[in-house]
Image (cartoon, rainbow over all chains, first blue to last red; front, side, top):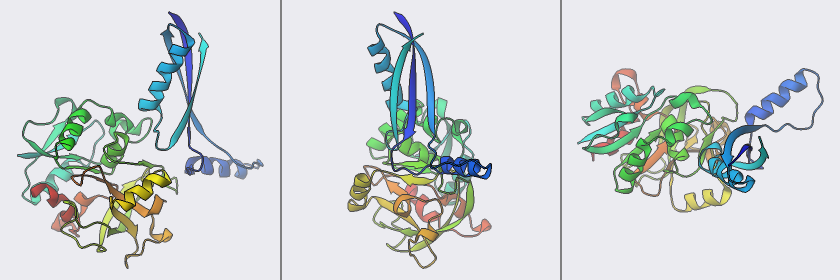
Length: 83
Length: 225
């Protein structure tokens, strides 16, 4: 078994409105920053032990499918690194 | 013979719901989620509140708690199941009902009275109303914007599974009358069966004559049939 950190990035599907990101973008503009757009995402770092990087990625992907993301509104991406 | 009003840590409309049901002569019992559903459960309410502090997403944690397996089994066997507000979020998170309720377009918590148009009056939840009838319920949520893929929404509408839409006093589902930016103004939907429904507005808060309107009684009476 090898220790890995799986990083799961969960973001809204393209086209799904993100009022919090819009509000944050407007607040940045009020602070004087120039920006075109702002997108927000959730990042989960899961420390786990697995037989291989693929096995770690698979388990983290299942975590995303079953809890970390809501497939109705979210896309997610899993990356794995040895810890 | 009892309607189980499921309490999670952070539920806060559980007692209101039980009281509204009792007022209608419907036997109701608070059921702590760790204790499971009572054996004689004839209906289930997932009440409003902030279960698990809305951690991750509103309803996400409660939807994955063990009692939801029992609720799903009950729903599959035809037992009426109603999710209100946080219960609606739990219902969608647990796939009892389609779609998702997410952050209001305003990015704010909204607590106000809204008008709803009855879209399908041929369900246990709405057969006390007429199709197209306008009722007035309160909302109290920060994450009530209904989201669903366009194709699935088309299917839902074609199957007549939209229960209520936000509208103005005249029954027009205009953008101005849509309090939270819900897709196609959807305020409540049915699950795979007519006996499973969720809605963001609060029927239990308009069911006691002492505190005003009683439009919500029509929804809750489904449990007395």
